[in-house]
Image (cartoon, rainbow, N blue to C red; front, side, top):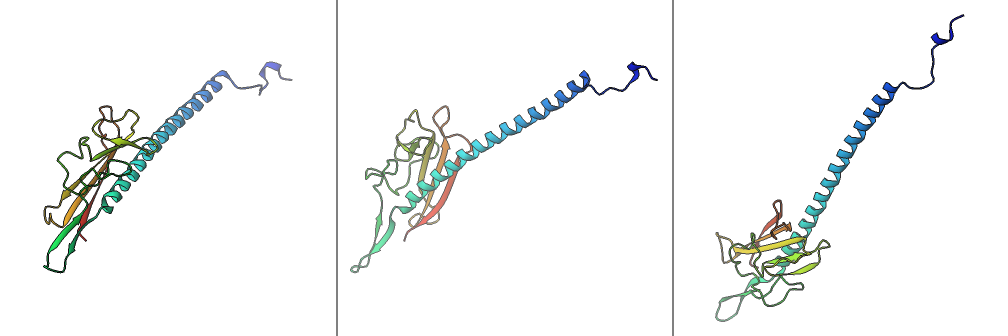
Length: 185
C-alpha cells in the first residue's frame, strides 16, 4: 500500500496556473477593448463624414437649381441672360438679398464670407450665416461660383466645402469638397 502523501490529487489549480490564466484573460480583454475603442472612433468619423457629404450635396443641389439661362427674343434677334443674381443661399429659407450665380469673391472656400457660408448644428439645422461662427455650430458649409476659364459666358464651376467646426472657427482638414460644372440652358 502506498503512502497517502504520494497519491495524485485533483483538488484545484496551482497558484501559478491561476496567475497565467488571469494574465491571458487580461491580455485578451485589453486587446478587445482597444479594438472596440478603434471601432467606435471609426464609426464616429464615418458618421461625421456622411453628414458632411449630405450637407454638401444639399447645398450643391440648391446652387444647381438657381436659374442660369439665355432667352431669345423675336425681333430684333438678340440673346438676353435670364439668370439668378439675387438669391442668398446663406439664409434658410433663401432670400433675395444675395448674389445668386454671380462670381464669388476670392477666398469663399477658405474663410467665412457672408453670403457664401452657413452654419449647421449636429442635427443639420441651419444656425444662420455671416462671418461669426455660432457657438453651437458643428458644421461649416462654404461655396463658390466661378466662371469656367474655357467658356466663362456659358460654363460655371460650382464648389461646396463642408467640414466640422475647428477650434479657431474654420472648417477642419478632411472636409468634403464637391465640384460640378453648370452650363447655360
